[in-house]
Length: 212
Image 1 (cartoon, rainbow, N blue to C red):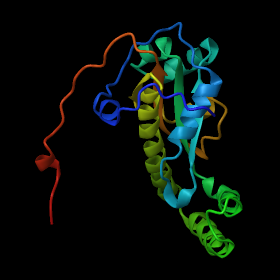
Image 2 (cartoon, one colour; image 1 turned 90 degrees about the vertical axis):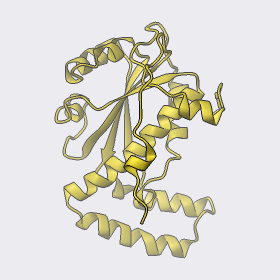
Image 3 (spheres, helix red, strand yellow; image 1 turned 45 degrees about the horizontal axis):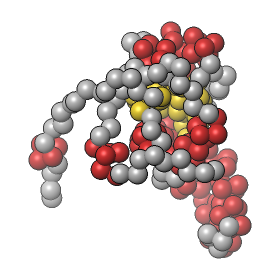
Image 4 (cartoon, one colour; image 1 turned 180 degrees about the horizontal axis):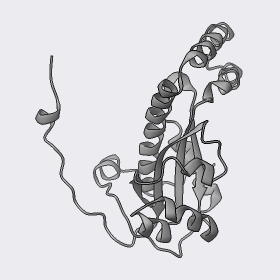
């Protein structure tokens, strides 16, 4: 995929990011560019490289109408954004261990013997974890990908709004996913901004940091 960055200024991308709640309703992001942004976002790290993040891009009027009653007070973003990206964590992502590590060997990024040592251990370890343990892992990994997607979107000329206020227990099933397997992490509104995000404040680092 061709890189479509229109802004590659690290400081502006990171420190200029604001949550935007109103977008140009007429602007559509192509599937090619959306997939490119997701590909770039998923260079984020994940536990033992299992990449448990899964994305559902809600962009049509019919699917947005389905999402609307599930997002509480975030309807402006749903109505105006190019898309609402639903980010889930796959609790059974360890099923892809063999595929991921075999690809690493094929591309010369990992010796065969290292792959053989890791695959069995990973599958065994994840298989013994309970739902809560796996949920914690995939939510952290999904959050890393979500943050990276927010910055990648800005590099492509878009703005985003991370949304945590939604019906977590209904989201997966509403969009055809197994709710026992796929855990909602976050929803990201994405599009061309028609308003600036408001300035916010942060606690001083001395207040939130302890040195030992």
